[in-house]
Image (tube, rainbow, N blue to C red; front, side, top):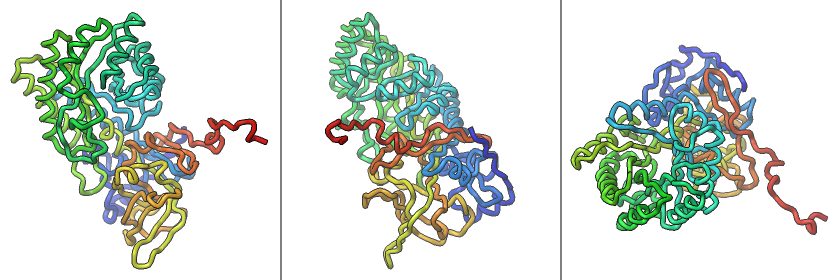
Amino acid sequence: MVSMQSSQSRSAVVAAASSLKYLERLSGEAVRSPNQSLMPLTATVTAQDHLAIGGCDVTELVKTFGSPLYILDEVSLSAACQQYQTALAEHYGGESLAIYASKAWNCLAVCALVKREGLGIDVVSGGELYTALQAGFEPEKIYFHGNNKSREELSQAVAIGCNVVADNWLELRSLAELAQAHGKTMAVMVRFTPGIECHTHEYIRTGHIDSKFGFDPEQLSEVFEFIKGADSLDCIGLHCHIGSQIFELQPHRDLADVLVDAFLKAQHYGLGVQQLNVGGGLGIRYTESDDPPSITTWVQQVCESIVRACKARGLALPKLICEPGRSLIGSACVTAYTIGSQKEVPGIRKYITVDGGMSDNPRPITYQSIYRSVLANQMSAPLTETVTVAGKHCESGDVLIKDASLPSTEPGDILVVLATGAYNYSMSSNYNRLARPAGVLVKDGQADLILRRETLEDLVRFDALPARLAK
């Protein structure tokens, strides 16, 4: 724990704001839903013209913890959790639960924080399941997803007694067999593809029929018949997910009718279904032109659609579950880098290079994702250059941002890339044998380490050198 209370000056903040395109919060009030803000909610500018988050000067954080550095704003993450729960309570007349899709960022501190806020958790591997348990989650609030759970992972789930979201025949049959062998009855949800298209990257669309996830809807009768005959399985509900980084509301409205019809079908087979899980997918704002619905608006539309579909069919409201991930944590985090070398290609572009790249943020090279950045040590400086921010990896495609608008930069300046909370750390790697970055949680001028920076020793910790090569 490090106390790093920054020196705040409202006059300095206001003065800086005129030329600061991306700082959207100047005082104590959040002007947007957390998923609609490019900056964490506590972002301010110090009297020294430095970016501060959670009351901590980012340049001082880099001095203390090094770079690259993930900086997670506790207030932003907590606010997003609270918005989901408040909106569900307000707009849904039945029982509800928001569960964190932890694949966005799964580590002990993040899991513990969302648990503290009262959410459940969605895990997709034995490792994520283990981390959630170590963070204190009760098995009944854990939902185990994944399209190829191993027998070992299913055994782990049976031993723990968490909820399992069955994705295919192999794991459904294996789960029934394992539960029976242990004399247990496992709570299972059936995931199926709803056949709903949405406008997002093809790699993160999951609701259309041609998807690796979930049962085909034409198989549901057979699936329900199997579960009905399996004494070791208790079908508690149904699950669908239509994709990720979605701004449209209509696909979620359409999902309600599909889910409720399947729910009635499960009841027809005598299954004790009680829950409907609509998945997640709400997008966040990565650029100025992005305009996602607010968390409250998204929840309201989902709730009203489920209520309408149930009422039209004379069905009592089931327990409603949603699985936000990116919209909880994406905008709550930034990544701080130190600028190094520069290269000018006359008449074409100028490159500036940072001390990280695709190993700590693989989304640009994987999804062609677009990010925004600021210079943390000169926040009010005029934006005089258009540059390409490149990483340090031996890969031509290792580019974090093309055509970034920045002040004039020098080696040693601190570049901050915004909205890096979702899928950056969780998809990070040791490409080129770079050590993974550290991460800190900031609030009220206090910075707590939540991810230790890997060392060179860590990089070879799991290597094995045969004796005949060690001579």
